[in-house]
Image (cartoon, rainbow, N blue to C red; front, side, top):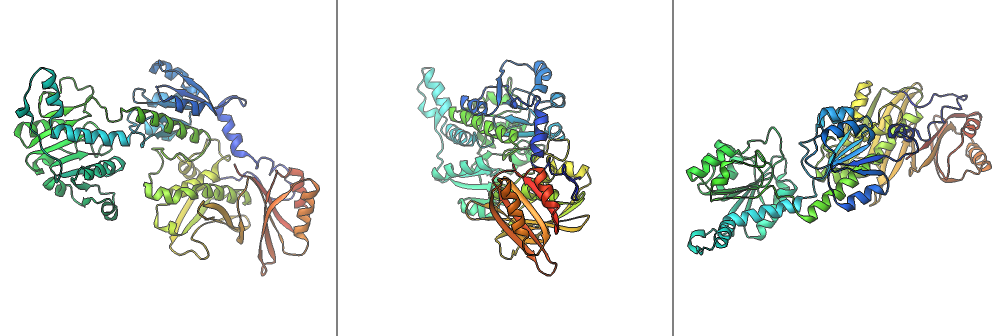
Length: 563
């Protein structure tokens, strides 16, 4: 990776582009330099979401656009918002020369070629929390409907019949509900079921025993242990090759006789052929199905059973969920177009909600550390050693390393760099990273240190966060300890540790009307060197930087504009 500058006292131009390289690179991707990023809203979303996007971007709402027309016009857009009908195929994605983000207003992304999008560095984001309440409530509704035969009794009475004895049901209180998949929806279902005085048993190999205990749920290590005890079973798994057909004939054989099952998640997780056999044999007393292997389920044998309650994929169909999906995806698209972290991106390294709460405040810091070390380097940097110390050491820090690469590469490569492709771009350029973790961090609760080497030897930058708002701080640079909060305009000076050096810098900046907002100095007396870090109210012109560099005793001067 080549830095944006070379060292030496003569390079006036070497800092000229250092102020805003990332913004220059992004501008080239949006067509005309005067135009706003363009967003195509291809399917209906809440007006609140469209209004949010229009505050910053040029928005076209084209709900009647077919696939052929989309293929012809997609190259004009920087973002697209879809629901489930639009197919973002490999062909369309390859034609999307300027596309930065695909926003799916909903949970499933089966209609997007994620592999093709990731290869092009296009973020694919969804709105996974938009319908969790709706889906959980629909699950409980189906649970009650089938246990008390509510739809069947309703249909009978509407037909003019009075058949009270035909629709006797079962109570939910004191029954065991088995929850397969204990993500956001599974948790909400469990909480509501406990409110109905049910006992809840759950299976999810990615949930800790402590989490189950915290929610008053019995977690099991083996799915067979759930099948043995559950009176009702509901599935809340994502759609994947591993989960399709998860509940099959073998699973039904292990269940209690008279069990009742619910699928309000994804069609095909419960194998329909196996469910039909179990219903015919009496092993399953009833079922409630909202999603099917093939939709609409024309000719599906499940529709022939009086003991099966069905709805036409209504899990997310509430006014609140639809509005929420539009607003959430608009926020995600805006974040992507503004080069901010996209929390709901499905093609970024997955991080659990608990881990995300810990690592999220350090993402901007890691980006800044990546930018900082490449700016102060003399020559290309080929490898980095990143050390995470303190409480961070207990968590998955992969996303933090990706954030570091984003900061290090942005504005230095031809491609648009984001959380999707930063790691891949680094690998393509032969840049290597080694991560290490230490539970103890002297002087700090958490500390992130990056070590590399340029032509002059070892380079070190480090940072932490301070206070409940996690304000970032730079605490190491050039192997020196410092303590300064990052700002939009910053300058770093490395010089001989002799009297008068700080005054010279202050005088030269003051003579040009450049105010120093904050300053910090790090010293190494044995080496006779010092580092001064300053934050400024406005940029330092290149000619002023050159004048400072020309002063005796200055080894290096670096000016950086942080976005």
